[in-house]
Image (cartoon, rainbow, N blue to C red; front, side, top):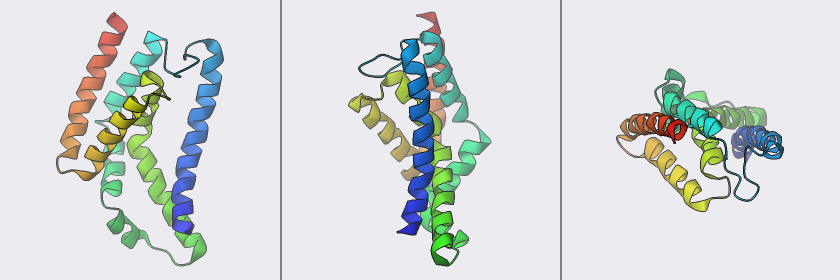
Length: 155
């Protein structure tokens, strides 16, 4: 239970940051009122390009390596006791946030309330983390996101 609490606390911290960003951006009119997606081509392009570039970063690869085999991670970093379990969960959660935070930021582009967009991003995360060849898919996605950023600025 404490392992899960630690893991979820890492995601909670990320969620608070994302919600705070939304709260700051929404009154500016940059994000739509209903679907909560970006109405700003420059903002969308920045998020798309950042997510695309991050797909190639050593940090993304390091985090993805830790997230791909949670049992190995838990075995290698196990510490006894409640505090050890909580910190282990938090540490693994931080790696998982590290894998996905910019992909989750793409919700500002496609819509925080857009279930199709959420499902698509979930599928991408699943493929990257679970399926063989997921890292190659991630690199292809990086190229697509960078190209999409360029097109967003041109249109």
